[in-house]
Length: 204
Ligand code: OGA
Ligand code: MN
Image (cartoon, rainbow, N blue to C red; front, side, top):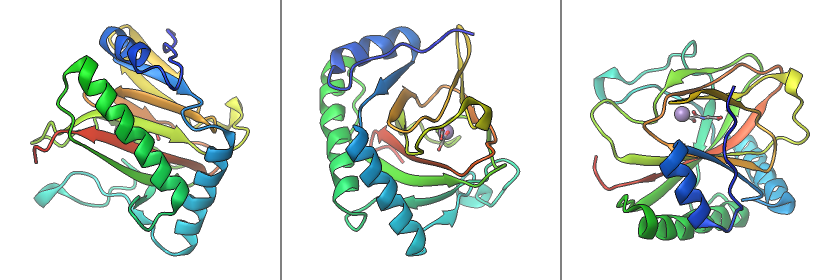
C-alpha cells in the first residue's frame, strides 16, 4: 500500500506540490497538541449543548438519513463554536489564500463541521461533492482523538490513482485531499472525533 506525502504545517508550497502530484497530503501539526486539545473540548461542549445532528446524504429531493452509508453526527462550526474553532477556521482561511496563489483553484470560502462517529459506524466510499455541484475543491480532516491505536480501526481510506491508502485518525493529524477523490471511513471500536473542512468555490 503506498503512503501519503507529508508537508510541514506552514509550508503551503510543499502542500501545493503534493496535491498536484498525488492529490493528497498529510499535515501533521497543522493543529499543535494544545490546539488539538482545545478543539476536542470545543467539540465536546458542542455535543453537550445538543448541536450535533445525524449527518444526511445527498441534497434536494435525494437528501435523507442513511445510517448504513454514513453513521456520523455533525455540528457546523460558526461564530458560536468558541475561540479554538475560530482560530482553526482562520488558519484554514490563510492557507486558502496561499494555495490559491499556487494552484489557481479559485477557492472562495471555507466551511467546517465537527464530526463524531459512534463505535461501529462508517462512511461508505464517496466523494465530497454533490452530483450537481463541484463547489468543493479541497477537503481537510483534522483528527481529535488522543492516542489512537491501530487495532481500534477507523482508518480513512483514500482511493488514489496509485492505489488505496489508509490513514489512522491520530489526534493532531490533518489530512488534505482533492474533493474529487473517492474515500471512505472504516468502522472503529471507539468514538471517533474530527473536524471535516472544505475549501470551495461559490458555485451552488
Ligand atoms: C467526510 C469524510 C473522513 C474522515 O466527512 O466527508 O469523508 O476521515 N471524513 O473523517
Ligand atoms: Mn468525505
